[in-house]
Length: 194
Figure (cartoon, rainbow, N blue to C red):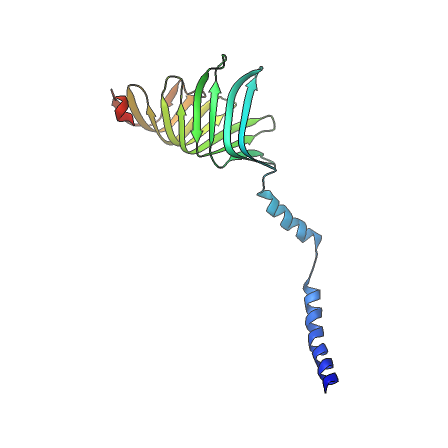
């Protein structure tokens, strides 16, 4: 009786094992597709506590500080700053000209350097005069050397507060035009701005 039970058990288990083995497949094309899909979202470089200097003609023009910098490759390479950033721009003499902070940043590369950069969430820009821009999204175009947004903006100057929907400015934020001005408060004291 033991021998018959063993043969019967073997005959029942054998087809099940054959089924399992036949369903296992190592198709290299499938494996490569799965691997390629998962790698699309992974950075080729990831770094923490980054400080990068940008120079032109042996002069430092900007300093970028970020908690995390992720660099991605592909047809449209880009750098992402998911934990926020601070960029300080300098004039020809090395004096601080403009400072930008944001909770998120992303820069797109055209193969010859950054083509344009976007700052998002709690974007603050302060120029040399002390004018302060607040918005949620700001784009810098490296070719035109302009910054712009179509989002709500608020600008605090020494004498007034201005609100609007959209802005165009030169990259050092020394000259700007507010689109669709919504309000303006003149003669505001410094204590009232805060």
